[in-house]
Length: 600
Image (tube, rainbow, N blue to C red; front, side, top):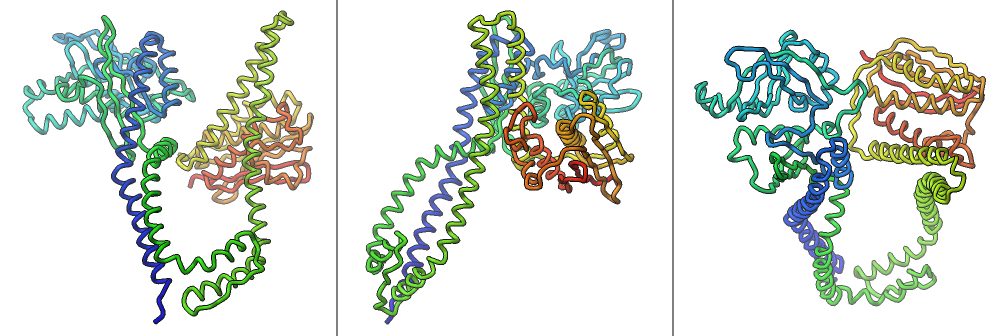
């Protein structure tokens, strides 16, 4: 009776693979998550110790502390700040309003000026939409939580407009206490709050377009601070940490690890180091996996070796007969054929190998083509690395040369000139790094492009006004053909695309020529076009100009171009908007264009 080798191979191979898969899955599911969390917590705690030491030296310098927070985030991908004894972010007066309380009888806080940190009452992204209600002179009602002689505002109502700003965590605890015990007298003991009235005297708000404080840009982090403050003040016996404390929270299906570390300096009120880190960053996860898999791979290798030994003894013995022939085939020698001596699966395998030997020659050419494609990909990667190296090498060389000249005292009367040259090169490198980070952000797949209606023609007018000195400097003629259009897109990003397209047009248009900026209504879409006269792009380069570090000049001179990333960033922005865009040669020059949906 024919003994089925296929059946044996199937049973043993399936059992082995299922066993290995089960070991990997169980190990990763059961052990890896806890291993990752423990390792992450240990790393962040060690980093916080170093942060505390640096903070102790710089705590009286507000700007230095903020730079220290940003540097900590860049190095450890962890948000960190310091809170006072009441749970308020320290030095938050840059984002606040000052309220002068009314002189009420029996009110111990009458005529007192309260400073209300706005981060606890509204998010940074709502600032520009709602800050118009926070005008000096407006009468307001303030709900405050009283902690001894200190007042912590948690709700603000602008009396005239009846607009509410509130800390939802304080409000939630207030509602919980009311629902648990509606007696007002008993409620005041658990939740000692007051309702105060006053007038806004000053509002400290960022100007339109100004970037708020770095930590305000992360709503999840600010929310955790507000929740910690509410717990700390309302339930101090439970929430006030006696020592370093870590715990996990979830936000938008993402897990975060929070760190609270009490710190007290001599003759000062106690403060808290408050940090938050995500447990799911890709780079950190990969690093943890590499450390974890060192142990897992050793175990799996041992298991595979033991199983394969028995497997080869029992099953693979009949396959040794074709070993010599297959070795020659591995050396691409297909002249020898395997003799077919059986009519079972081994015989079928021999015939299949003989057929494979005959057909492999036909596939060698295809294989060579695949190798060429791989070489092309490798060439692209090397080209990108070379581009980065090239862009950084030149400014570094200039800086090194200037430093040598200044250090040696040569041409000391031109010292300011060399310092200015070094500053320009540093700024150029900074711009290159910013562009690379921005491009990486768009290519990460996690960036969400926010869209809203805006006046497209007004944005283009503003860009033209902004670049007018460059246009007049080259004696160019700017023709605008703009129709009023309200488009739906991300205004800042579209403005960035227009600035880049128009800057390229100015850079590559000969003096005295024409640049045409137009908006054309095409039904549900608006077509934005920027055309420069007098200079065309070779057809074979039209698709390449969107690549990183690609410039049309073979010399790749930096003086005639930017960082080489502008058009690549524009491409990603427009792809994230999912709109048509492109570049084409016209009869008299080059046209860059894109389409945006109109507001219906």
